Amino acid sequence: MLLILAVMMTAAACQADPAPPPRTSAPPTAAPPTSPPPAIVRPDGSSCPDHPTPACTGAPRGLQLKEVQLNTENVAFRVRSSGTVLDGVHIPGHLLVHADDITIRNSVIDGEVINADGARSFRFTITDSTVGTPDKCATMPAIGYDKYKATRVLVQGHGDGFRFSGDDVEIRDSYVKLCSRPGDHSDGIQAYNGGKGLLFHHNTVDQRGVKDITAPIFLVDGKSRDVTVTDNLVMGGTYSIQVRNASGKQIVRGNKLVDKSWVYGPVDSECAKTEWAGNELVTIDESYRVTSIVGPLACAGAS
Image (cartoon, rainbow, N blue to C red):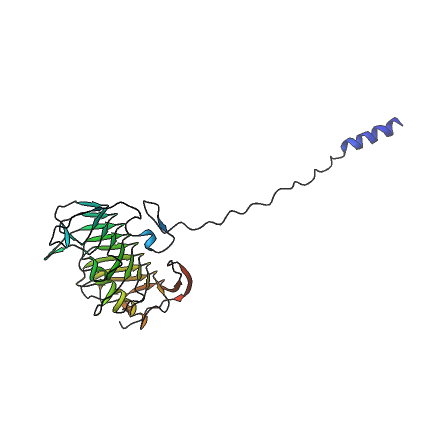
């Protein structure tokens, strides 16, 4: 009997403990969806999710501006000292840049910003500023002509937005709302006696509803060299994108054109000489956000 009891106790001791019940855990929590970072963020915190709009271009909203006294024939303010900085000013007329290395920022210029003085021209930058007023339409370009860099500029009340008439022009993250007067040939950007080195990158040009027009992008001058047009959103025009005749490189890449916004056709460009890639037809909402991709935008035009 004792032997049987010992065997039974040994067998019981050798049995494994019952397996613990399976652990239950809460299902993993899905990470909240994240939006892509804004394409443009300004120092004052204003931003645009994609292409430029009035919300993230021009003089910052609510900024107190100092009005400057016009000093040239009561129609313009002329800058003659190199290195001048115009920050937070309102110029109730034209701005004549007649010295090198002028900086314009956080400002409103009611007229044009022009850097030509006879045969000479001068280097300048303009950032976070508004050029033109919405209650009138001037035929002349808002900003020109060469050796300038424009960033987050809002252009309004002008038949022409930017002029490329010389070397070293760079225009980024800017918004242009065009207008026209009878007899105008309105353009968002035009090359006229162009020079070497144009970068027109990530801008919005709206020419819809304008009567006397050529194109949002009109770069056909034979004196131009090395022209790059990338990642812009454009709409309107006879033929909306016209790029031809430049020597060196011609690059048209990653641009978006609002479908059926043109008069005659979407493109009239020099296809054989142009690096044309990734351009698309799109639809947009009232805030210029792309709502759909209609399809690829092919190059067209005689070479």
